[in-house]
Every structure is written in structure tokens, then in C-alpha cells.
Image (tube, rainbow, N blue to C red; front, top):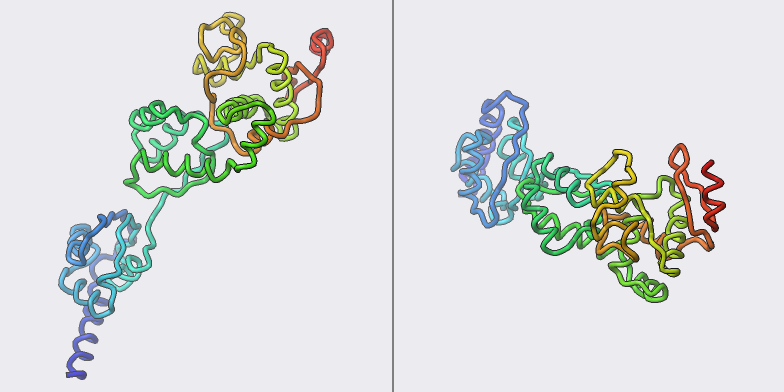
Length: 306
């Protein structure tokens, strides 16, 4: 009986190798999704439909003999047409799922993130934005590099990004925010403005301090970045008419912080708000090259612009 089993296994392996070699000479990679809870037979059917194996029964038998049958994992896989049964079984056993790399830059708005994900066919922009707007998550979609599997839902993507925000926003930040008399939403809102205003790393804390000083004195923040957000203007030069736009995000007309973040800030901008520079400056303007000139007094501010 043992000899018979060995011969049977040997013949199956030979058939698998033979069929894998001759099934396709194409070097094409296919993206295949194995649904959660699929049986070995159901997996074999998916593979056969995609012409990655030539025989369902052989796949099922080999998976049983090798002990893989109850250990095959669901998910989305990138499988080469030349892989053959044994390599496919190993791939499904190890759970080497295929995922797309997505880098979300600091300062992207939720809409920009939705567009980026839609370009990669990972989400529907409209569905994504409905979930973001419903839960007021602008500012809490943490900018980072992610790996998402095709077929992931919009809610799952959002959950991943907000969970990353939760990991990055340390408990000590809440204590520091209280010292500054800011709520978490205040911190994230101001950090989002700093993210948009700052062009070089060294100026984040200086810019944050100017806005904190203005808040303390009850002045308008007068951030052009908030006007751009209100107008959905990402790059065009602003006019004096733009500064008068009626919007709760217009910090030239409204006192205090806007009702929420204007983008999704990175950790450095959040830290800049919580640990700002020690300065009495109340003004700044942009110079050539994206750097800023800071001043304590208005007359000084005007003089430096001449």
C-alpha cells in the first residue's frame, strides 16, 4: 500500500509539473481574487476559469496530499501563468497576497486622496467622499504609504487611515493641547493650515507660533490656505475679491479657527502646533523660493515687503 501511495504521489507530481509547463508559455501575470471561506474545490474552479491550472481534481488531490487543503488563504493574488500548481499552492498557503502601494502626501485633502485612490481603481470617489463628509474625517486620514488589496472597500481604506492617525496622535498630545487650551480638532485644524502654509521644514514651528499668537489676541488668522480650501483653488493666484468670499473657512472674515481641518496634515505639522517656536511674531509673508519673512509689528511687516 505504501509503495502504491508513493507511486501515486510521484505520478501526480509529474502530471502537475508537466501541465504547469505546457499550460501556458505566456509570462503574463494575472490578478486573481480568492473569496473568503472558499473551499479547495472552489479555489480550483477559480484557478481553472483563469486558465492557471488545467485540472481541478489534480489541484484538489495535490493540496490534500501536501496538507495544504485546509490552510489555503483567501485574498487577492498576482499569479504568473507559468507558475503551475505547486507554486500556486505554496503562494496560497503562505498568503502572499497582492497589494497596491499608495503614497498619500502630507497636505492632501480628502478629495485629492479620493482621486488618487480612484486612479488606482481602489475606490469610487463619490462613495469615499460621502463616508468622509458624513463622519467629518477631513484631517484624520493620515498621510503615509499604504498597501491596499484590490477589492478593498472605501470604508476599509478609511478605517486603515484613521487607525494610523490614532497610532500617530500620541496620548501626550492631548495633555499638551490642554495646556494650549486647544481641543484635538483645534490642533488638527491648525496643523492643516500650517501644513499648507509651510514650504520648508524649519518654518513650521514659526508659522504655528504666529497663528497661536493671533488666536490668543483674538485676531483674524488671515491664512490664504483657508481661502483656497473654501474656493477649491489649489494653485491660482488669489485676488482681493477672493478674500471676501462668504465661507466659514474664510479666516480673513471670521475670527478663530475654521470649523475643521483644510487638509490632512502630517505628524511634523501636528507637532509644530503642540510644540511651537518661542516667538512674539504676529505676521509673515512669502518670499521667493517659498520661504517666509516674519515680523512682530505691522509697520515692520509692511516695510519688509517693499
